[in-house]
Image 1 (cartoon, rainbow, N blue to C red):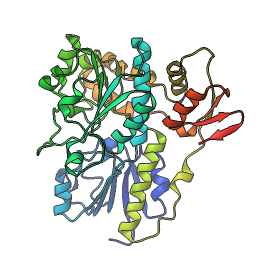
Image 2 (image 1 turned 90 degrees about the vertical axis):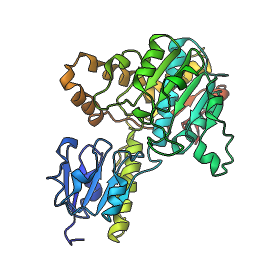
Image 3 (image 1 turned 180 degrees about the vertical axis):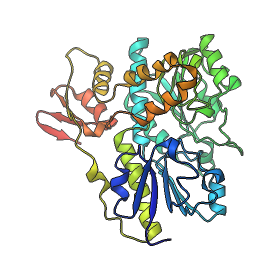
Image 4 (image 1 turned 30 degrees about the vertical axis):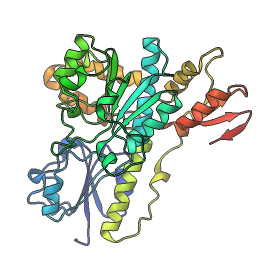
Length: 392
């Protein structure tokens, strides 16, 4: 490794320049600017999921370390990196809480718009890793019955109460939290195609925040058109950033692959990459990444109104922290954009995504008699203040 380290980073990662500027020369580029030419003299490359890290990008470069500030790695040719002796790190679990809060907001919004209660409904969670395990706990906090599926975990002897995938098909909601894999017994490409979707309970809800290719586009379109599915929530899409607009128009809630885009999740991922780079270079990790993050703008939230049910109050409180309908409205503008510009529009929604903070940053002020709401909010990760006493 040269003495003067050159680090190429994606400029849309918050605080990325501040994190690495004491290590070496930092070049911050837009996603579209990360090319064979711009990484040729880089020693370290830090990317997001939009950058395909393959031999086409890196051949002829001096890159010896690649980091991605994502939990997913399907955009990286890890076998190629290993053959070239290039160190690779990702950020597993970094945005898992962000995704679980997205699912929480989506469930509450669907219940409100569909005029049903989450309490007593059954949710099937496919994939019980960093994300799925958090979704499990939050769904239980909402009073839902949870069915879990994760064949790799089951083979490892997990103590989780796991079920075969077929048993989840009777669930009222199914949410997907698996990596995109193309080979082996646990391949997930088109895991939910026509045969699988047809076996879901009529009127059920399908949610996907994993990878677009886990759900086959034409099959879910058909199921929504024919009303076999009652609703769908899609944050991820086949063919990103050029997504299927007719499918966008059919789903109940849509977003541009931002479920994990809380500021807290992004900072977690950056910290993990920063620490890995320091280990690689055998230097101390003495930059406090968390100290770069500002305090949340409106940390205190009061109970919005009296005479609300627990679920209604939860929806109002969650909406003040994270308005999922805003993401839905913004991504639907894509249908008004000329077809040739849609991919760029989708990428811009991601690159310019607003600051979103996780629930733990907010203090909820409740009256002393709101014991059930207090219990659920605490389980969802909020700080709750009753009569001046903060309960973490």
